[in-house]
Length: 534
Image (cartoon, rainbow, N blue to C red):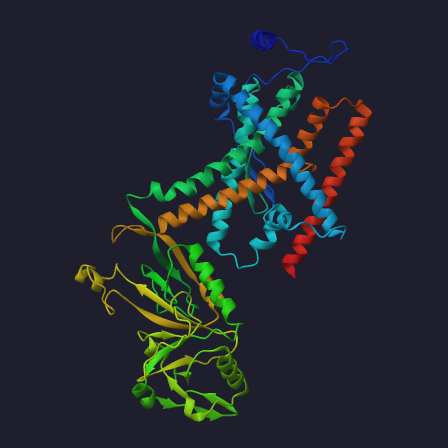
């Protein structure tokens, strides 16, 4: 340790006196030396072309250099940990890449737990990210996340370099085609006069900073409800931030409304919402799950009869086709669905009734999740009949209960008591529930004041999640043994540090690894691209 400090002091004295420090290989004589960049570049030329443009500046050179030299001891410990992490990541990602290549060549089917990891890896990210339409807001999140992630990546290289006494030539922001980014430039020759371990720390610093950024983003998302607690409540109910104009819910729900129940089940988080939607979507394929209401016999008698047109039962206007049954057992349910499919319902059991007219009635049937708890599923009295809606296959019947606490009508009542007309209500959605769930913008946060900015928590949360994914992808990509990425430099220096190979064999191993890694990554990328197109 003392010898290392003496070498550092000697290099610093050489730099201050203008002498050029020399790094000698074992068994060689002094050769051509390289002077570290000691003076700031007087003029920087910005590059502009049809597909690439950048903006270079040297404003951050001195602050970064002074910070790196002031805290170089702590920074070297920090980046030494990062070096171990990056080397481990390089080995792990390389193994995953080889397993993916073997799977693509049908050499093995893969392991279930490993397939789950690979589906969220850099090879499966694009195919899952582009299954749904991308909005302008999503592009904005992606651009901001990319700029932040790349800037933190390059900041890691810069701090690692300055902690080793290497000055920065310039920093730059660039736009390549449509992809923004940042870079930090320093003299490549200056890396030849420092130990290889120091060079390896510099190359691994970007990956390590991206990993640290992922941890910070995950921690921030976890602590966000506590941070925003004075201004926002969290997890009480889902708040509507927007509804697509093409959505079936347009006109029923508006920004500021709270969705409290879905089919009688309370929903508090987006996860619960999606789980309920998925469960309800799966139920339409099971003929033994039907939803019924205990409708008074008098209301049924006053309802309109269904019309039998073109061998099908139809209801006029916006009425819904219902049928009454005595009890919900599997045999009766199968008969009803078969009859509904074959359009042979008895005229005396089919009638038309408004969908929202059954709301508020007692529920019967086994299609309600955790709402009807009875072994016989027959909860209706003698004056009621268990009526179930009949609709086309693939169509879901869903009750949505909402409240509007921020409306002027509800504010006049003080919100002390629930009023069906002023503070909320319920309605029935009939259609494709998966499309419905993607046409509405929900958040788990609710302002504690009427005029609070409801969009802020969702914007912050989405930005943190996007930064996490982009930073993770950047760390994994730069860990790959691929040309023009950090993995190339890390592998090259690592072979020199930890390998006892001759220069010729080392060069063969390096080139073969880079060529193979680049070729496999290109194949995997093309496979992901084809899966997106198909």
